[in-house]
Length: 375
Image (cartoon, rainbow, N blue to C red; front, side, top):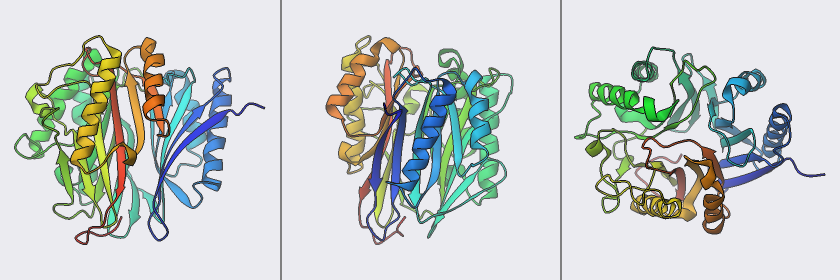
């Protein structure tokens, strides 16, 4: 009988360490009904917890859907019975023709709990990892929705003894009709960040701003976020790769290209959504998907190198394409260069129409740093 799912798995951590896993779970038979695909995916996830990731618990899950308006309620009804972490649901159709895919981030030897307002805590040793998924509201415009999302998140962090500027590591903004609504997000984020001492003279936050839809058509922006309580000064730093990329504020937006976090036993690197751009903020290779992919890879490679990492340290890849017709070419390129990396390809236009492709990733590397506690 044909296997209904495939799992790509990354593991980091030896005996005595917190182990962490990144899993991409895909459906292999697109002819299955949505209910059958969901059942197969959740079964594969539960089998993973019993086998290769035994002893791990979920830290964060993101489900990629092909039609959120008709799929999200059914999925949430199933998940809410066994919710164990922050959940993100977004309409970003998997480009393999299936209706659903899952990125799951898992850890061992941690404790978890949930707080009012949607923050999920993952704790171990000196650190509390705070995840939120699929935050949204129904304000009138993308600008107002973003402003409310960020202001509410600032309040939630304050309740946890945290500040946006000091503790938030990563955000994701999913924007319905990104070509129209992204400008409102940018305006609100820029203005809220100023109030939080996030400026071109201090720093910003690593982020992806990409097309994605909520089940409710009145929601034009939804947000996922990750913060850490317990970091010491100097433990978190930012990546620039100035030979290849320019500061984002030079073209009016406010996010970091990448963030590095050093623990006593490992380094985490978060690479923001990165496209085919040069250090003057210009789109490179307009209209050429192959050349844009190569330049994007080069940009990400430079950011990783600044953090002392290579693609061998990358735990997962999320790839966004504007045009479904580019999928076959891009998938072949990835299979040749990254045959063993957990990867998902999604239909999700980038925030600037000239960019045909964007990629984000996370890397994990073994280090020893006596200045900081182990993860």
